[in-house]
Image (cartoon, rainbow, N blue to C red; front, side, top):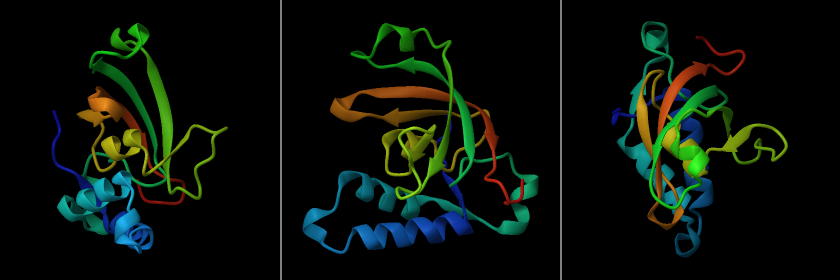
Length: 147
C-alpha cells in the first residue's frame, strides 16, 4: 500500500494556483478543493532532474492504466471481482471532457491516483463513505514531458 504522494514541481505549482483560484470565497470552497489543498500541502516535490531515476508517477496529463483490486460495500458486483482494467488521463478541470477518458483532477479518482507510482496500490475515497482500492499498472507521462 502506497501512502506517500510525490508531485513534480510543475504539478505542484499548477495545482497550488488552481487551489488559490477556487478558494477565493472561503465560504464556498468545494470539498474536492479542500482535499487538493491538503494533498499539495502534504506532498513531496520531486526535483525535475531526478524524475528519470524514479518510477513513473501519476501527474497532470499522464495516462494511467489501473485495475480495481477491491472495493467497499455498495458498489456494483462487477467491480468487486477486480479483473477489470481501465485507463484515464488526469486533467485540469478546464481540460477534462466527458467524451474522452479524461478525469478532472478534482474528481475522487484523480485525487486518489495523483502523485503515486506504477505498481502502487492506493485507496480512493468515494462519496457516502465508500472506497476503492486500485492497483496502478502503468503510467505514461504527458506528451512533451520527460519520462
